[in-house]
Image (cartoon, rainbow, N blue to C red; front, side):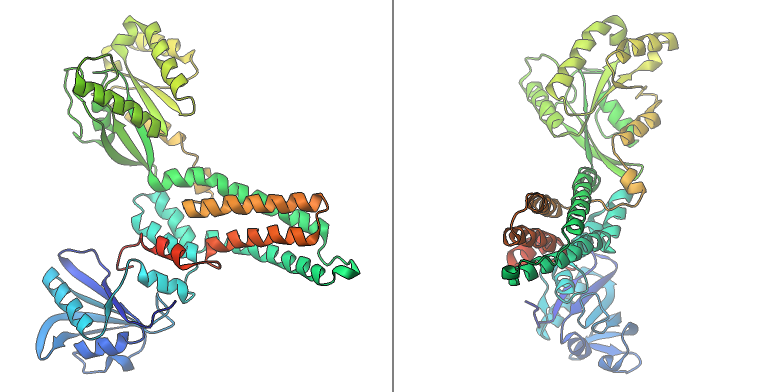
Length: 466
């Protein structure tokens, strides 16, 4: 599968900038670079040491394209495990394209999405889960997702899986050996030790599978729907959380006709806030569509904020008990946070009386003034409490990849079959089938088991220069 062609791509973001970095990798990377690069020292590039940087010019037929820095990484001490050359040129899009076209004429081919990292995997520089972590690292936009991607890229997840796979493989070999001596009725695999191993593997797999619930929200952000009746201050709350005028605020009820979304990082975790249309009975067709979308967004959200107007609560508190119960009954699995807004319009005693009324419903409850921006920090801390960051703080392995999650579920199913077979006295040849399947799913995660379709799907999601 490893191509011998030399590939080239822009490794820095496209567009104009101070500098741009072009990357070459392949058997002829140094030879091609030498044809277009003239060092100010006059030294031949191919004879220079690895991990060195050289000042010079990109020249073709006497025409100077740019003054550049050229970095050399000789195999196998490079990202891809091949000869790699990186050219740092000025960031003009014209210069970038001229140099890339020149390199293509000299024998390079444009790299496909993720092809540099694919070559790193195929050359044994990274396992498959580490390679996937590269894409996660590039797309990480908060501290938590960055931390998880770094841990996976350093091999934390794959090391744990490889260790378990190695131990299981050892027992699988002993089981296979027993099959070779089936007529002599001997046992090479200690059944007690094997059962202990299966119990330990089952425990680790369950922990990793459970971690996906946290990992998935950390990677993709936690959607939070802000809902409530018109004019309770939903848009004002969104603006207060983001600390900018993101949503239109008006005293006219029903101003927000569509959903407005924006993201905020709280304590290293990404939250995606969705300001929805106010829920009420209306004959306005456009507003009705907005209300319908509100319920769709509640379905998609992982946390629901129900915003209540303190003044309205003071007048008809019991009515809101019914509204709260409606949402709780319609979405029983979703954490509900009730927020009493506009508390600046009431006295402390009045606010406390309202709190006592609602606390009988066993709810997470906050009091704020979105307009005065009071209680916003306390609200952010409450939102953070919905995320179990314990595993993250303890630097435990957290699964964020859906493909890994699926393979872990299948591996757990096979391990449980093996364990049941062992405890039921199932013949070794039947147990061996389930063990092989478990080993297969472990191998899928680290890349010891792959196919072209799997690799194509994974690396198609990468950017071109990586």
